[in-house]
Amino acid sequence: MKMRFVCVVVMGLVVVLGGLPFSSDAQLDPCFYKKSCPQVHSIVFNVVQKVAKTDPRMPASLLRLFFHDCFVQGCDASILLNNTATIVSEQQAFPNNNSIRGLNVVNDIKTAVENACPNVVSCADILALAAEVSSFLGGGPYLKFPLGRRDSLTANLTLANQNLPAPFFNLTQLKASFAAQGLNTTDLVTLSGAHTFGRGHCFFILGRLYNFSGTGKPDPTLDTTYLQQLRKICPQGGPNNLLNLDPTTPDTFDKNYYSNLKVKKGLFQSDQELFSTPGADTINIVNKFSSDQKAFFNSFATSMIKMGNIGVLTGNKGEIRKQCNFVNKKSVEVDTGSLASESEEGMVSSI
Ligand code: HEM
Ligand SMILES: *[C@@H]1O[C@H](CO)[C@@H](O)[C@H](O)[C@H]1NC(C)=O
Ligand SMILES: *[C@@H]1O[C@H](CO)[C@@H](O)[C@H](O)[C@H]1NC(C)=O
Ligand SMILES: *[C@@H]1O[C@H](CO)[C@@H](O)[C@H](O)[C@H]1NC(C)=O
Ligand SMILES: *[C@@H]1O[C@H](CO)[C@@H](O)[C@H](O)[C@H]1NC(C)=O
Ligand SMILES: *[C@@H]1O[C@H](CO)[C@@H](O)[C@H](O)[C@H]1NC(C)=O
Ligand SMILES: *[C@@H]1O[C@H](CO)[C@@H](O)[C@H](O)[C@H]1NC(C)=O
Image (cartoon, rainbow, N blue to C red):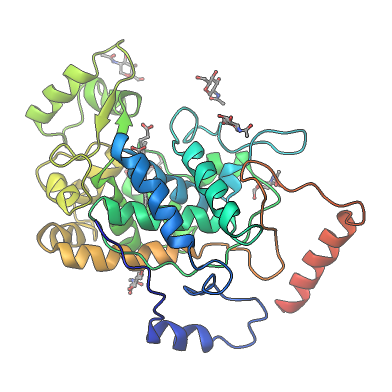
């Protein structure tokens, strides 16, 4: 399989970015590493491709990791920070604990990238590039992420629990969760399409299978044959087994997620809500994508780049971490005063 790493700038994008008035912050740029680390794309590609050969689920896991980073204080690699004396890791947040995967793969990528171009590529950009490669390896669209993100000095467990949507959410809650990140209804339906590959645990659907919203009955928006299949894998009081998010093509990035919703085979309530909420404005979008994979792929590329721009640190904000799980050790000269003056500056320039 081949992937082109040509650094092509989309004309429209340049016009839009260049048109922002009085933007003192540096902008992300697809060619950010063109001079400083031109091999970065192929390095990320090679590591992920190699892992995917023995672990076909890994592209899905890496794509999800990027989503879980971006929704929590922006795409700043905060999710990668481990517990230390000063950091409360996001990795034990309810949506992440025993669920996120790929942290070691990210570290392997970082090591390979540091060997080629030390101190240049951020962990936040590595997460974006890993997501880019993962979509491609799964058979999905080629995402051309703008780069130049920097890494956070903090993590926020509280925010991870607050901002990441739950599989028990109804459509109103899903829309609110995405709107809080500047993502609209089209983005919600589009990005949910990432559930076209990867796995989920029984834990998240037991309610749907046995006692939906306290009714004592299964979720009526679940196909009855599919219900029986799911109950076999997830017996009541049984082990917390893994399920394919897409029962038709479990490791392929395609439009089947949407055709599944149309036949009541969405795995999570949050999936099925997009099609089964009466009168919802999401139904037309599901219909469209279920019959037009190109439309889904184009929309996915757009929405992913939008998600990838959430709360990014650029310019001299944050840092380029040496090791993705830890913030760099501060030099003696740098104290908290410099942080304070930086945020003051930010406030002044935003007026
Ligand atoms: C719309 C709200 C969303 C909810 C409620 C949600 C929830 C979940 C849950 C509960 C799992 C299974 C976790 C587990 O059992 O360990 C999962 C897996 C996954 N999610 Fe989402 N998700 C949402 C949106 C997204 C988005 C926006 C993306 C990426 C763009 C995404 C990508 C994935 C992938 C690829 C997996 C499979 C991961 C793996 O196999 O390791 N999800 N999601
Ligand atoms: C960081 O924490 C994870 C568990 O969340 C652990 O698997 C990993 O070994 C830790 N990494 C380092 C470098 O200590
Ligand atoms: C995270 O998972 C571990 C291991 O299963 C468990 O011991 C711990 O209580 C969980 N933490 C949270 C905050 O749920
Ligand atoms: C985490 O985010 C919350 C909500 O924005 C904020 O109140 C809190 O101060 C943050 N905590 C840390 C450790 O940054
Ligand atoms: C969605 O869930 C919220 C919180 O549980 C609830 O207040 C709201 O009524 C629900 N909306 C719909 C349309 O069911
Ligand atoms: C279903 O859940 C409700 C509320 O949590 C509970 O009161 C009820 O006993 C449960 N029914 C069954 C059949 O487990
Ligand atoms: C939602 O965002 C997409 C880009 O992701 C944009 O094309 C679309 O016009 C927006 N829709 C609405 C209703 O604002």
